[in-house]
Length: 118
Image 1 (tube, helix red, strand yellow):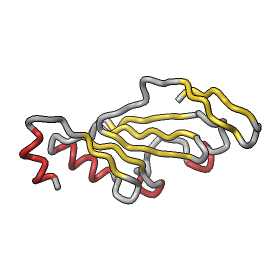
Image 2 (cartoon, rainbow, N blue to C red):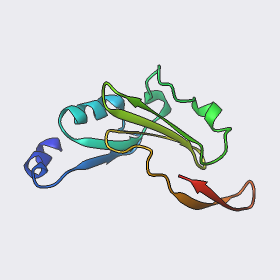
Image 3 (cartoon, rainbow, N blue to C red):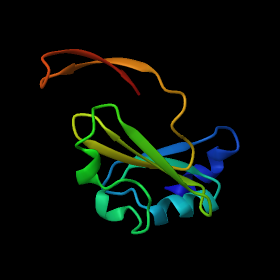
């Protein structure tokens, strides 16, 4: 796939997205080393062992809208974890946590609409 993109890369910037089946730190580092950018949801078992993000079980007890991030400076990869309906973790070489915006979301636990910072 990357070989096919090389011909077009000069005319347009490409940012690739992956679902959690493919996203891993090794893939994102490879893309970064080859001047591509990528983002994707990442499975818990693919987050590096020494990562300072709060583990999934602890963060899911926090209120919806809570998030935290960490940057792997050596590889230029940011990991962001937040609480939505469940806990979501993403890894990216091109997007971070800013800007945040307000969203309106329905809470089944508190049967009403909540205004959340995302």
